[in-house]
Image 1 (cartoon, rainbow, N blue to C red):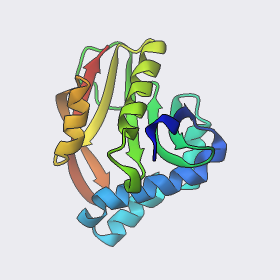
Image 2 (cartoon, one colour):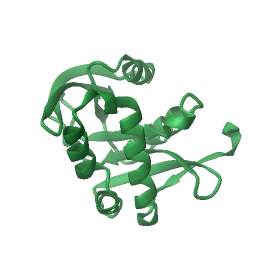
Image 3 (tube, rainbow, N blue to C red):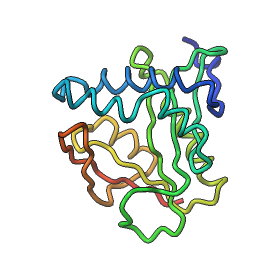
Image 4 (cartoon, rainbow, N blue to C red):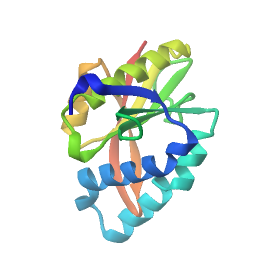
Amino acid sequence: MATHSLTVRLATPADAATLADLGRRAFVAKFGHLYRPEDLAAFLDGSHTEQKLHAELTDPGMVTAVVEDGPGRLLGFCKLRLESSLPRVTDAAHPLELKQLYGDPDVLGQGLGARLMDWALGEARRRGADEVQLSVWSENPGAQRFYGRYGFVKVGEVDFMVGEQRDEDWLFALKL
């Protein structure tokens, strides 16, 4: 894959099925081995379905970008919640939440995350956010390093449920 052919565009409701599949594959590839099958299935059925993605893509409080390599070949996505739903632990007046930044597990390490993060930070600034917030699994040092390169710092902790399993996520924030 040549990175010069990558484009970032806003997702549309027509992308819902593809994004649901991509989200499922990315989550299972990275984290699937950590959970009981019934917990993993419950999580995926609640967060990575065509119906859920369609609802998010038509929600005026969210915006989603995709990175693609040619028309219709989606390789990653990034969701932004325009008003953060994370616990308030900073003094931000207008925090925006980076909800998910996922890449196709078959093409990781080729700059997809950076392209999507650049879009997300630009979009946050364009929309007048004074902070970008996100949660990341406490035992995912690779993602923590990625966010750290952009200046995100740990500001708190939150529970993240996968079925009945509770994981500790760290809240990260970046002042804009």
